[in-house]
Length: 305
Length: 305
Image (tube, rainbow over all chains, first blue to last red; front, side, top):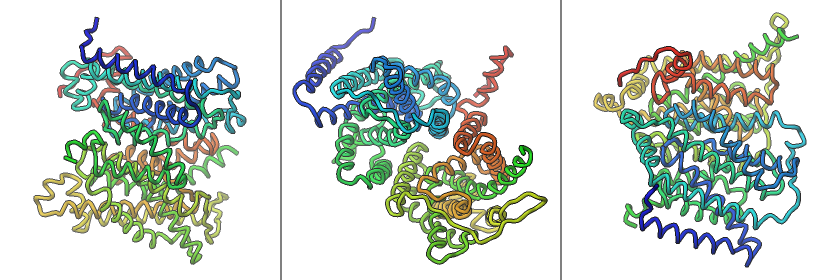
């Protein structure tokens, strides 16, 4: 039985009460605020789940949009063509992402840092182009989901996922798994020589990250109500997640939350004001963050501002 | 029908290989000297293709020979990019450089999309088609392949025979020792980056004859160049050229057999496999061999580290 410290108890109580307060929102208000909050929660969840593999173990994945797209696409296909209960379909989508990540993870996690990034990007793109080639033409044009007022359900789904992803990230960070992952990030050979089963920990982080990404992908895909494969597999998702985590501070606990909240609001504004410039600004932001603030907002205290 | 078109596609692959070689050599140079994985390399290629397009559109310049203009223009661009973004990243952990150049690539793609519109563009060569032993191929493609190989030869002479080339090779081997011997490492990095970008520009200028020019063309050629560099070996000149021809042949033959839409899938699969098979990039050298032996039930000997 795990000992829960006083601080942790407080945290859980606070988080759970905040969770229930926030969960009541769609009953009071509606429309754009609920939509925006759902987006924020989805990206908080995505940022935390990406941070588990990329921030903790230092294996920066460029290919999470593959899992996201695969899960979103399969979940939406199940909802539209099999009339499946949406949440079950989304869970199945997440499980598909999870099972896909196992054969991908085993060979790829043997590669060192940058090569891992390249290979994940290559695999995601290969998956994308394979799916584009094998699916029927009709689905390529897009899957129309049955019309339903889904926003509150998506809201609750993303809220739960953000909560679960945060808790998982927190629990991993404060356990021997987190310790092993940090050891892998700092010096993998040393960690291995000290008896850490590096493959197992890396696989755990990678698969759980893919699973959460898949579920959130399914939720967001369901929310769009008309999903084209091109949209589902768009690498913009990956870029967004990366900018958020980098902005907040990679590998930290507050970083992904702060980054994704600030960034989702900024990006909604940018979409509204400069739709054509949007991605250029994102690219510019990544370069500037890496150039001027390599530790993200988390490190701003050290700069003495 | 099959063997006939197969021969033609192999010849097409060889002709493509000559073009890929020059772009991959640029990437290999940047990679070998500055130790930066340049994700924006394909974007330099794309800008080279656009430069060719503008020379064709404005002055009706023969696109095969535009390389003389793309080289200096892209070298200047490379210098600007180096001064603004790459210089602070040299010597940093390779992942921050990877993220920085990834951001740069997103920025360049979308900037080009903004100023030159995402519409497909193309150039038309005035060189005729030729028949050799009943096989029909265009003289322009032959010329581009030869120009690519000529560029590679000139690069080889530059690296082996000139003082600057020797400085570049020395910095690639050991930057600290080279600095002690009186080589200005920062200057060498700048020159290398400029040359690498300019070589990618030549590649783009040559490739624009056979491929459509879009802002997104860079991604595919970027990963192709990675594939070639990884297959050919880091810092290996002849290895890169042999790998370029291999990848070119795989690409065209694969496209002939499976269809053009599968081409990117084939590339990404080749890239993934080449990354996974080359044990040099593995976190633990010899892991795959050991794993295969484990699967086969053979004894494994642990390497002392």
